[in-house]
Length: 407
Image (cartoon, rainbow, N blue to C red):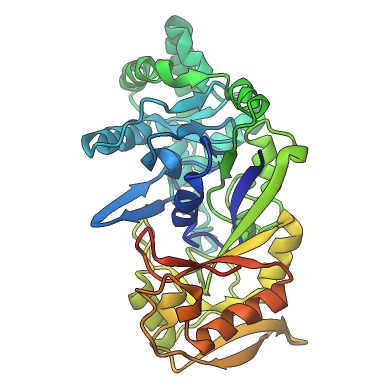
């Protein structure tokens, strides 16, 4: 059975959770392969709305084994808050598995994140201040603490205390307030004991599943152009959301990846600083924010908005070896008399647009491709032609079943 990777093809917030939720029905495991609790994935099921940060989106299916892979950095207070919320709403998390090799986030990472960002002044990156970057930095420095260490409580207690003392020195040197070391130790020893039953060798777990011909779905957070190596550096995240990161973050080799789905909105959004060629800073941009509810799931920050950029999408196809596209939130453009798509950049880097007539039709109830207005079909067809890979799924609303299978 194939391994499917779902990756954002823009700057994040493309609606990956909805597509993952749709695809999860035909898989046995959904695996988060990178990022941390700075990612917000939202799934709407009937009148119920689920906002997920760490637990993989497939948890809403009882047959799914949700897995947090080795490439993720895990904030334990957030993980258990999310787990408790899901359990209180009748969603079992008993099958959740967390990689013993996943690195943990601690309060010192969040303190340092805020201090580093404040120190940049006007050159702020726009980090979510969740401690993600400093946690990955400690991983690269080979001083990070990993989930598997909670299985030895005495050693874990000692390691947390020593690390807290060391990190406090850096916090104070940067002008921050020192943290309460003993309080952190007690908090994380308790959290570690709670985490222990979920910890396992997820690389072995996933390869055993592959040996049984189970179908696995690998879920990325953020997106292609926030990738540490291939994004709009330095305005990027601290990990590799691209499809290559799925291999590193799960321990599954590339020969197993047979389906790589790139998710894109029918327009563009971006949170925080960084380049945005098609950005709209006028009333059209405000309209996209209002209709698309373009505020961060985790931070609540207003997203920047602009027209769809297929120059970016063509690059995303190359970087990820995308086999198909899922085009989300087409319905957000329902009331626009004309819509634009950037198909190339001019000599000065400015966007050059194809201008298409709008469909001025409510797509919210459309679940059959034949019922899409001709103008909407032309929009999707243009994306296919420009990008060079097929569009398979088109989102027509926020609800779980608001989509059409395009091809």
